[in-house]
Image (cartoon, rainbow, N blue to C red; front, side, top):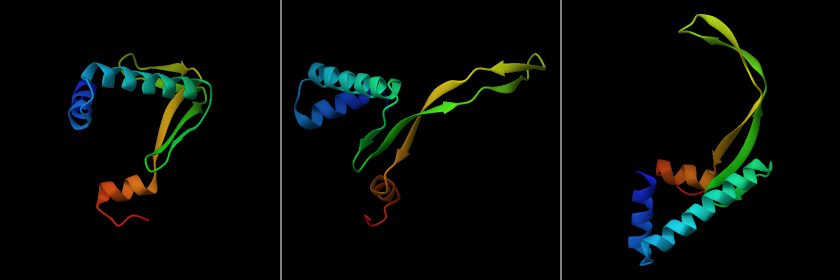
Length: 95
């Protein structure tokens, strides 16, 4: 499923115009990106937690050129699903 498919599905199920759903969806994504960029943790009850985690600098290996490369320290997004979400995906009773 693509972002456009998701927007179309939400618009169809809610009866809201597709353009309005697109604007809300983009605003939600922008808010999530901003919060993670500021180092905040975003918790959505019943869905999961978004965090920005730091990866330390390390030495990597380029297999094409067969040489070592230095990888910089970086921040990566991390998502941990809630127990309720995991139970729904696996068809288990809710905790």
